[in-house]
Image (cartoon, rainbow, N blue to C red; front, side, top):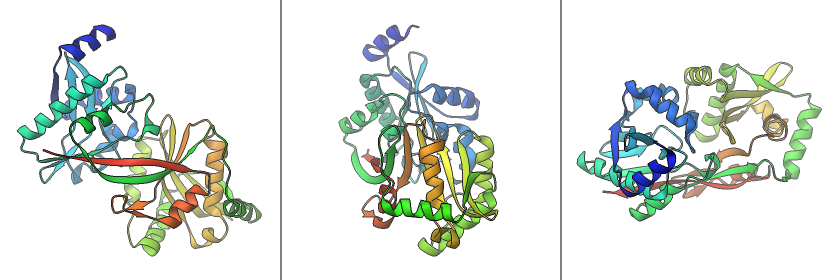
Length: 325
């Protein structure tokens, strides 16, 4: 079926059908995500299923006239459908030629599916626009038409890499300090040393643990060596800071960053970020530092966001919506 004929039939006549994901559909799912206009490796089953023991998967595939047109990474917990509680974000992943009327049909079928199962609520994490390979906000309109309410707005800080950017004087000073201390930056595979620094940092400053264990990070980095990378700074061959990057086609996302006590005093993390922003990722479109908010966006961590904005970053929203059924 030609794309033009498919669009006409699905927009005007075709109905959208839903199928629950199962392991026999893994190749179909992964192949679709890789060719979609807003999918990335986070939605691959090989990524999603590393923590499958923690979630009751309820991922869905949407078809129209026998053709797969969208997928939704999702799980169910206590009568709520999440898209997906184990991912930073993960809304409807759609094929390139999908149109807004078809997205409305997808949401209509999704809501009917949930009502039929007795699900009372949908919590929907939108995919930030910087991760779209082509404009893909059809789901935002569908959320509006189905009376979704914004329940969380988390502020991430992002640099548009092709543009002109200026580092704050504090960042420049720290980078110069690192160079005076002969700090060396390089890609590393020593995830154990990095996660030790990360655990100490989070425990002392925030009283929390990393989302991933070192075993999980090593597993995921092994599965996605082109997408998950560790960059570290060294003083006298000892790691003093590190950054774990999640790469997609448009975006270099800083998933984890940690400074040792020594590294904090000598600009060890700043020089890594300078290298990644101005050298390693200069061909990417965006550098995403990640969110600086707590309590569903109600609390802004002023120190954290100031540091990111001092690199020349500005705001991108990570929005979460709620539909009460």
